[in-house]
Amino acid sequence: MLTASTSSWVKFFTKAGIPSQAAGWYAHVFVENRFQMDMLMDLNKEYLRKMGITTMGDFIAILCHSKTVCNQSARDRVLSSQSAVVEGPVLPEHLANLVPVAAVSATLSNPPKSAVSRPSSAGSLPNKSRKDFFEHKITLPAGGGSTTNIVRIDGR
Image 1 (cartoon, rainbow, N blue to C red):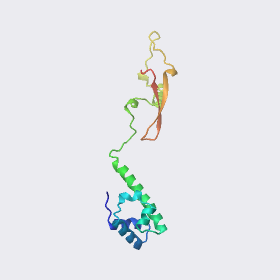
Image 2 (image 1 turned 45 degrees about the horizontal axis):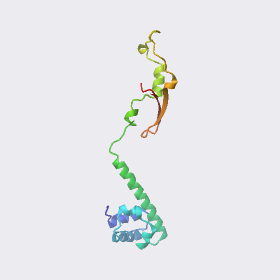
Image 3 (image 1 turned 180 degrees about the vertical axis):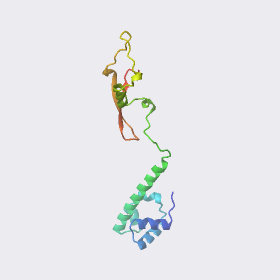
Image 4 (image 1 turned 30 degrees about the horizontal axis):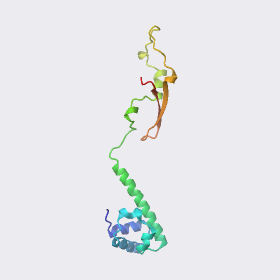
């Protein structure tokens, strides 16, 4: 639990837009009631009334600022918990060896001349039809983009 001092509550109420005299009094009330910063998300009008805070404008200002502080604290916790920075999308192991269609198409349409060897007609390889392949669209979580890959159905 985060223990909040009177001065930290005065800062909280001042940032909420509460006049300084009321901010000092509210801070004292929060300390007397042992209200902690990590309890802000549970704060509501009923609790404020029970602590003697009755001005409607102050209710709204305090509750709005409480929400802002809670949201900022949550963002800070998430950002501080990310220990490693991922530079690019990381694919699961079973997808890591797939070749993007664009790379395959570019290679097929412009093969390097030194790599082209045409088999003789006697020993030619059987042609695979388009039905032996399917396209698989993958949305990558880290990059937000997508890529299309060709995967052999027969596992070769």
